[in-house]
Amino acid sequence: MALDPDELYEVDSDVPDLAGAVLLHHFDGFVDAGSAGGLVAEQLLSEFAHRVVARFDVDRLIDYRARRPPMIYVTDHWAEYRAPELVVNLLHDHDGTPFLLLTGPEPDREWELFSAAVRQLVQRWGVRLTVGFHGIPMGVPHTRPLGLTAHATRPELVGGYQPLSDRLKVPGSIAGLLELRLGEHGHDAMGFAAHVPHYLAQASYASAGLRLLEAVIDATGLALSADGMRESARTTDAEINRQVEESDEVADVVRALERQYDTFADAEAEKDSLLAETVEHMPTADELGSAFEQFLADQQGPPRPEN
Image (tube, rainbow, N blue to C red; front, top):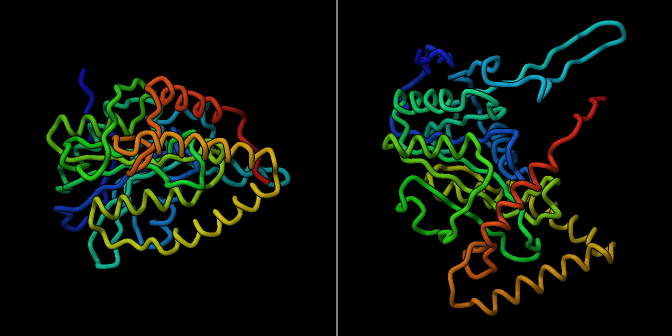
């Protein structure tokens, strides 16, 4: 028996006309090196007033035993349960233009039904473009231009970015499946992946968030401010440089990556590349796939207790 996607979510009864709006999305639980995509989502939710206009049934989508939600214990009783939320928020940019932001944990199950449900909302609201964003780990130094991979359901959407010539096999994600299924049904969708130095993958790397935010602004035309993220990036970069200077071991790693970067840049100055919009070493499909797998493996482990 076929399942009905609209049973997977509830929509607010008071949603304005959203024809031509943009839907942004970021899901927790997959690759997001440097917390790059998470920083963008947090920035948007802190900068603009927002309200939930659609809520998904997390009891059907999330495996609680794989990702246990936090509970608060006080003295002799359970005081609070913090349920996960997978929601679409309505925001307005600095010009008053409405846009949507879908955030929450990546579904553990019913991916096809979830993709169909999001597609229903795209059609219902007349969304013109769907955009996802996250960070991926790369063997590059933080002292060189930060690269970006762009992909879309139509090549015209990413005409200003250098395409990847390799055919890759990487772990699947709901963001990737959503983009694929939207494209199959004639909807415009795209995504961005900022290239985060692998030694900063576990940190909160504001420069990668800034790179993503600027790409989202360029792709959507939304009036979003990057000033706060830019200031955070300057502060973070200064702290990274201080720590590098204080550690000979870390400094040696960075210098080695710089030499590798510069060697390939000099050798391929007239060629297309992946890791930057100018010139840079292009990793093989196996290297990229291994980076994805290693990053996912690094994320596994027991949750940290909350104080």
